[in-house]
Every structure is written in structure tokens, then in C-alpha cells.
Amino acid sequence: MPANKIYIIGIGYKPLDKSAIDIICRSEVILASKRLYEVFKRYEDFEAIKGKVAVINNVDETINFISSEVRKFGSSEAKDIVLLASGDPMFFGIGRRAIREFGKDSVEILPDLSSVQVAFSRIKEPWDDALLISLHGGPDPAKRRRLPYELSDIPALLATHNKLAVLTDKENNPAVIANILVKSSELNMFVCERLGHHDERVTSGSPEEVAGMSFSDPNVVIIINTATSSHKSPTGGELKAPALAEAAVSFGLTESEIQHSKGLITKDEVRAIAIHKLKLPLKGVFWDIGAGSGSISIEAAKLCPGLKVFAVEKDKEQIDNIRENRMRFNALNIEVINGPAPDILKGLPGPDRVFIGGSGGMIDSIIDYISKTAAGIIVINATTIETLNRAVDCLKKTGFNADISQVSVSRTKSIGDSNYLSALNPVFIIKGERR
Image (cartoon, rainbow, N blue to C red; front, side, top):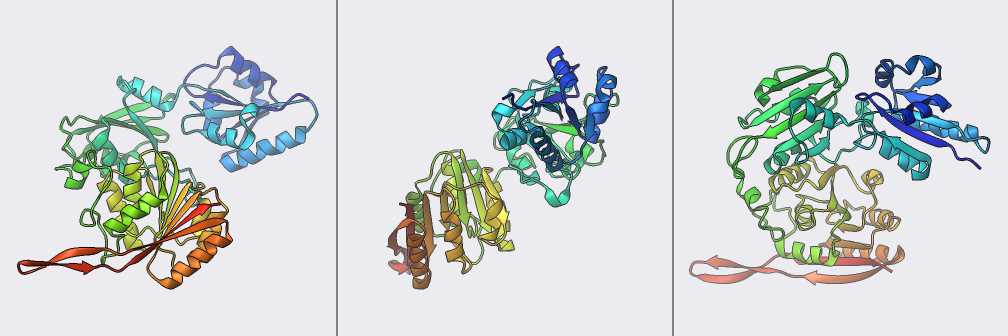
């Protein structure tokens, strides 16, 4: 039985090649957003096939339309569907989503140049040494997708990368990006507007100059850090001492180095044991639930840079602490999630490891939710016997073996010329490992 084929064809910068033209001519339907429809109208093949073009401006609606068409064709003769994409569909584009929805065997990608390729060619700079990120969260503010980097990450990224290319949107626009960099005199910004259109424009200037301008969509921002000293921050001034030490120290931060509130932080000795029991993988997903100041997240992120860390916390003051620590230690593989567990966990990628530092009285439902994921190890810190008992019971009921340690730490304190040991509150560390 012939299979339906979905062709995702990039447009915007080059004429279509013969294979793309043949596919478009024989396709059953051609899908395009309103903007790409206007771009496609400039192609010489448009007039011959314009009757097959359907304009859908929403990604979810586009995916649903393709699904409906595939079901409609059913077991009859296979039909080809074309989805027009901007530039390279696999560069922060719809290609990833289409493959996830329909499978690699059903999708074929025919890329154009990416907007970043074109942008770097316009400013005549090589881009093999650039970091490429997207701050394009989607057109609907209520449905903005979660991004791996945030606007506030840009200064830290520029401390370790000389070139940064940013895909923008109306919220994270060039002027907003420039505003967080205005203190730097060592950055040069390029804004490449409406690349491939007749009215494309390239503007260059300092962040202070760009912050006072407005730009047309779509656009790409390129930032080049001309600073030669690794000890300078892209926002001006010297980097903080913890950030300077970041490259040398991958594990063993102290409580005094980590911003926290009211003494609410996992103590150094307890943190070391908890991370040891987690047996963190080099890559994968780690949930830190009830993250507090983010001390466990920071240590885990620095120890395993290839690990994606989700720091989950509902308290606003603690969220601010996590964000500050994330920037201070350049731990950009941490994503901060604000909300109560277990409800807020539902939109996250499934974890390989989970740490629970605080549960807000929801330890049973949190463990029950985690048990339905592929997490192999859960480590829980508990300060009360009641939480200990509930955690152990729930672990056993949901398919985990429970191992319990009690950690009692005493630290030296001085009185005059003498030293004595002062005990900290003991902590139960429970390790749940999948049977």
C-alpha cells in the first residue's frame, strides 16, 4: 500500500530546485502561513499552483489539518502534502514537530538556507564559532512555548561566547535584548530585518544605540563580543568571584557562595550525600522539586553540563534566588519552573532522576506522579518523622525500594580561644530505586 508523504519545503532565500517544484506540482495540498504565502507569491511557480494553497496561521491547526488529510486519504492511493516553512525547517522550525507527530518515515525535509546563515553572510562574519539560540516563543502570549534560554541569560552567554545569534519575536525583540546590554561598550549588535524580502535591512550599533530603535519582523540579532579579557562581564565591570571560579570548580559550593533566604538551603554536607545517592547521568533530565535556593540544581548542573535540570519551586522569593544563582554560576542548563508540584510537573519532559527537597505536604501525590515516569532514582530529604514515614510508604507502594540514611552534622564554633562542636538539625535522606 503506498504511504502518504509529508514534504516540508523551506522557502525564502533561494529559487526552488527541480525536485521541490515536482513535489509541489503533484501534491494534493500546499500549506502556508500568511507570511510565507506572501513570500511564496514571489516564486515563478506560484501562479500555476496557487489554487492548491491553504493558508493556516497556527501551528497546532496546521498539524491537525495534516492529520485530518492523512486520515481522509486512508487506504486509498497515497497523496502528497506540502508544508512550506521558513528557511531550514530543522533549525528551530516546524520540522522537529512534524517528525514527532508523523514519524521520520512519513516526513521528508527539503531545506532552504537558514535565516542565521543569511544574516551572517550579510554582515560578512563567519558563524562556525557562534552560539545559536531562539527566543521565539510563538505568536500567542498565552501559549508561548518553553524556551531553553531566557532573555536574562544573554549576558552570561556572552561571557563565554564571542558571537551570539538570536532568533527573536515581538516580545523578545532587538530593542529589549539591547536594553539588558546597554552597560557594555564591548559589544556590537547587528539587526537583520526581513531577510529575503525586497525591503530587507541590516542595522549595526552599540546596545545603547539599538535600544532606542524599532525594527520590522521577522528579524535576527547577532551580537559580537569584542572584549579580549575573560575577566570582563558583558554587562560591564568585573565578573563576580563565584563566576570566575566556575571553570575551575565543578562540585563543592558552600552555603555562603549560594544566594539563599533565611537560612533555607540544603546544607553542604547533606547536599553532597544527596547528590551522591542520585547517581546523576551525564545526560538526561533531572527534576529538583521544592528546589528552594536551587543549591542542588546548581551543583547538579555544574557537575553534569549535559544534564537538563528543571528547578521546580512555588515560592516567589526562592524563584528569584534560583534565577540569581543560575546566572551567577552560569548554569544555563537549568530551567526554572514556578508552580506547585505535582500539577506543574505535567508539562515537563520525563525525568531520569528526581530530588525532592520540599513537597508542601504533597509528598504522596508527588511520588505517585513520578512513579508513572521512567525515573530510576528518587532522593528525598526529610526533616520530620512524619514525612519520612509517608515517603517510605509511598515509595514501596509505587514500585521503589527504599533506603534510609540519617545525616547528623556538627560544625566547629569558637568561644574565645576554644572551639566546640555545634550540631545542626539531623536530616533523613531517603533513596527510592526502581525495582
